[in-house]
Image 1 (tube, helix red, strand yellow):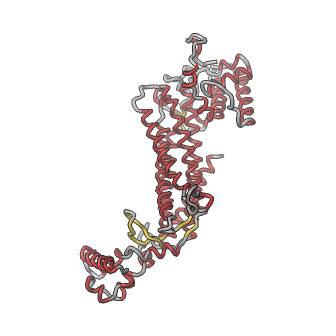
Image 2 (image 1 turned 90 degrees about the horizontal axis):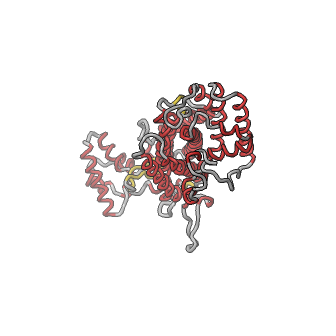
Image 3 (image 1 turned 90 degrees about the vertical axis):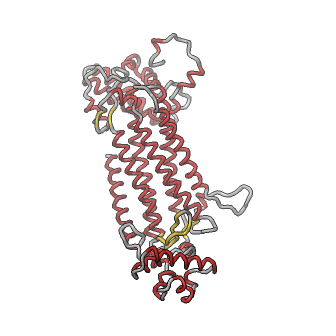
Length: 470
């Protein structure tokens, strides 16, 4: 049975178009939302006098029977055929209770129903994404605390730049994820308004208490414009954007660890559980888990682009184009959750080689900036200090030696004030790290402070998520 069949001649449906237009294969994921929204909506219809209490009770019991059956049969949708999940529910309800099932649609449209369910899904999806992000953030903090004191080269342009703490590096990704969580919160807030009662586009003709309906369905407020809310999918595009940016951050982390795990650097090694080998080369250990994260980031970027293109140029109000939003939404959320979980496990099982990191800090003249800073402390203008240190670096490169190997006489040709203290600054990456004591810097004191603040922020996030389950 179609929900719209009366206008059309029977027996003239093209099977090709039936397959082309169905959405049940996707929106079956909304089944529990559909049953819940309908049950609560029916109570409010009866309260508004739009439905007899006896009819409402019978309909609600029928929907509850369906819910129990669905929950007992995880593969409930296998072999089922329907245009969409809403059609399936109504057809199933009619088998449960007979003709009264035809009153289910009183005063509502699939338009306000589907967007209500989509918003409920988005709110729940955001909670799950935040929990997954919290898991990764906790792993980053655990590693940062465990390896506090480990120094490695920091890079710009993929060239050695200055020494930093490995913990400081990890906390950079903590900050990225914290911003992602903040964006998820913003998105959740904008999704948290009730469409039900908007009808197809013009609002319902029945005297529903939409504010009470919003409270019962767990929405913070009621949508103010029925024309807008039935066709609004901004919140879908926004969530896909946040998923996309989160995966951009994970992709950057993946790229770092792929480089760090290569034998040329050897700073880290992935566990076997998150690596693969080569079908030809027996020695290979490939960081495929990280490469897949990097690849899946591109996939979700494509989903975002498709979703925004879908919305571009749609006339008000609802258009069937919007059926395509669910493929992008489901895939974007699922992929992002998978990547967050895999990244968490990769980091939790990562083997760290502090000695290789420390050894690399003595290559590439990472203390050059500290030499220049020390000359500035001796009243030399920074531009002159920069020039002197640069000439010393060029000399060392020509001789293929490092700062620690240059003689005092050689150094004074380029830095006339060279002495024991400058030699110590030049040869100590750890000292360079210690000096970065300004707020947000890589000095151990500041990094410890970042860890404590991060733990407090994570505690607040977990508290907020726990409260939502009440």
